[in-house]
Amino acid sequence: MINEVLRVFRELEKKDFRILTGIETGMKHFEWVPVEDLNKYTKLPYAKLEYRLKKLVRSNLVVRTFQPYEGYQIYFEGYDALALNTFVKRKSINAIGDEVGVGKESVIFEAVKEPELAIGDPIPVIIKFHREGRTSFKQVRRVRDHLGEREHFSWIYAARLAAQREYGIMTTLYPKVSIPKPIDQNRHAIVMELAKGSILSKTKVLDPEWYLDEILRQVKLTYSLGIIHADLSEYNIFVAEDCVQLIDWPQYVTPAHPHADELLERDVSNVLNHFYKKYGTKRDLEEVLREIKSEWKPEAGDKAGKEIAGEAGEEIGTETETETDFEEDIKDDFEEDFEEDMQG
Ligand SMILES: Nc1ncnc2c1ncn2[C@@H]1O[C@H](COP(=O)(O)OP(=O)(O)O)[C@@H](O)[C@H]1O
Ligand SMILES: [Mg+2]
Image 1 (cartoon, rainbow, N blue to C red):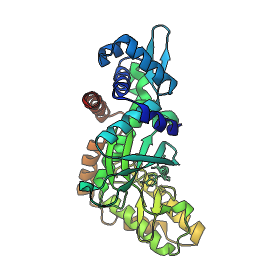
Image 2 (image 1 turned 60 degrees about the vertical axis):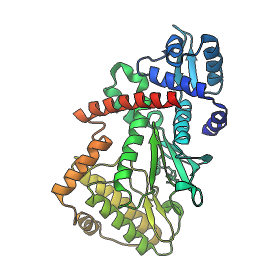
Image 3 (image 1 turned 120 degrees about the vertical axis):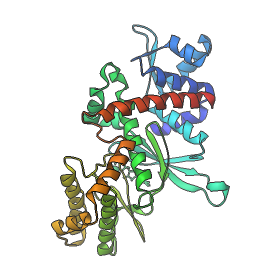
């Protein structure tokens, strides 16, 4: 699916990106973006526009309707192509490799980035394309609630929101907490360094006590910054020879969240259960939780948490002011992207 996008991506020209951006922008106002509007946005004469649109439809980047008028929508694959194009232009990536993973709500690709000042070896990175709108009905509905008549736009919002939230929190946690270095974010996609080692669930570690301690230490560090992962398990932890790294952050919460304690307890239980089942390593849940919370200062931590949350769009999914503010931010971002893409 996305491999197809990569092949198509290589053949796309500046004018194609302009059309894709035009459809993306138009979708803020229309369920199906009229061809007349694309003509206005792109300043391409109709004949050329039609020719290119036909190609984009054939490549499955966009979809067309003729009823009640000729109009277009972008597909996730078209959106992928726009994000990739931005990453290439910003030099956040230089080459794209294979698909390395499909998560619950994402598609992950290997890529490489030129080293700083072009000295040394290329840096292995991954691109995480969020897919929230497609797979998580609950999340789409949450976003949809305040979208009103722009419901058709919901998957773009949902996936983009998740990517912004994840990138925001990663830049806050890195490098204090052991996570892959965040590099760039655009639309629904994030570029980050390749995690070291392999996923805990697929690995048999030789020194389980050390790894368990190290994971719990990272959970404690995270908590002391006013953050709870909220989806931690053996599937979101990488283990290497000398370190562990926690991944997959878009659903994080702060200790002020109404279910903060339950979420922290679930995170820790998942980890303890994994080590108990696989290695027979025993720990007392209550004791571990007490230790994790021991250095968190509610005033400082809560404040930090709130600031972070404000930046990264906390409380998505509940009725708060932040949501509206955040929606405004996203709209501004679209304008910026459009400008940026048009200049490129
Ligand atoms: N930084 C990374 N380095 C290497 N592999 C990664 C990285 N981030 C994600 N992956 C791979 O992609 C999969 C899905 O990523 P994840 O962030 O967990 O998203 P999801 O929300 O879809 O579970 C992971 O299980 C892992 O195999
Ligand atoms: Mg995951």
